[in-house]
Length: 257
Image 1 (cartoon, helix red, strand yellow):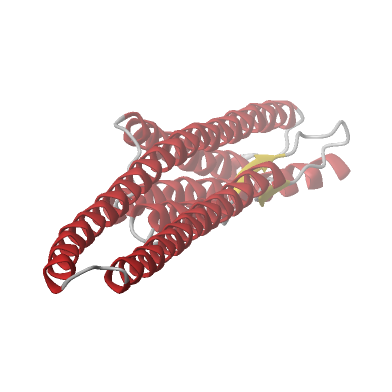
Image 2 (cartoon, one colour):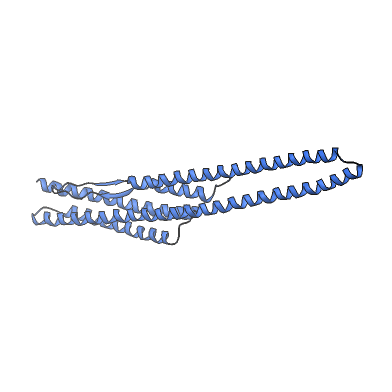
């Protein structure tokens, strides 16, 4: 059974997302220390790993079942033909005349054609049934895939929201530091850079949500677009991480002083 194409593309799509990191920002502690980590949550990794394994196992099970059905059908045909030949031999051996044998052969020819046509019909029905099963399987996989595209989008939304909360905390730290007379020029600049990067991530995330809303497909073009959107979001959040870490480091130094 050949199941390459859409199903393989779906599996490849899952691989695209399984390696996509999601940014999570840790909260600023009471002592002023904080960190921002970029990592791939185990939940997303596990979901798409399970997705690929399920597709692979279900596809193999469908393939094996189809091959077993074809083999059973082949054996049935062989048994019917063997029985037909044995019965024909008996009839010919016991025929009373050459004319009788001639009529037996003519009837056998017609019966053999009917058997051949029946075999072809059964094989055609079996292939059509298998085609319908593959179509249903593809639809089920697409439904599963769309649901988890939404889950991935939700995780990204949560990462952006968490990053915005960290920005607000750092802004509060800057405001407090300024009241002590400490220089906050560099921290303010870094915070502004982080806000720009997070805004870029939000824009890319909006584009990703719109892309998902149009309907997930298994085409290479769709996969490329989604992968590009995810990469844009991740790159922006990573840049925000660099700026926030630097700002926190500076603010922590003021705290120590």
